[in-house]
Length: 297
Image 1 (cartoon, rainbow, N blue to C red):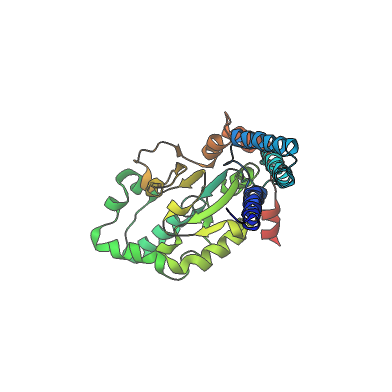
Image 2: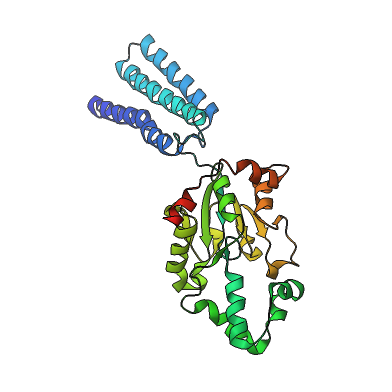
């Protein structure tokens, strides 16, 4: 015969474990949502708890009664939190994130090619232009004897200081910020000393992008975003979202599933409008001009 005391302890511990199992789940739902919880599972579990409660009442079993009353409260709380999370999704109260757009820097919002070609032509006496690169390709436009010079230039001090801004990129990112979380993602590890200059450049020209949304990385596979706007299609290879190839002279002859020749076309893709030009025109009076005001002060 088992000891009644031991049996009671075992039963009590078992009741505490099975009843309290939903406490960690409630904390998880509050922080991350309940998308991984099935409504069917919660409903069946709730019915089971109610039946056990009825069983305890029928046989006047206090331990069964209190355990299932507590379990009912916890499961019902989980269900309410899951429903509430879904109700407030996207409002910022639930924590569920908005769609994300990751945006490359060089040749997408910063005109580094103009600086690169200017320094290269001055150093070599060549006359390489964006039009030549667009026609022949980058590799064919740079003679092998000057390849080392061309590749060295971005590593020299001051290269990334005060680059020109790609046309309409500021307005476009402000517009996109109303619907998306916008991240700047630069493969800056290719030129490690560029971090400081790029960060200062972004603060000057894109102050509306939070510093927490600036990502300097190597492999863009790590970027968790829905869209990546980049002038290098190699970054799309293992990217889990949708890549948009931003037109640049070096990728002019490259095929892409989605290509944008300018920021008007990016807006047409991401805002799903008929006319990107109409978007820019209608939004001029509503665009946040904080960036221009800060830059002028």
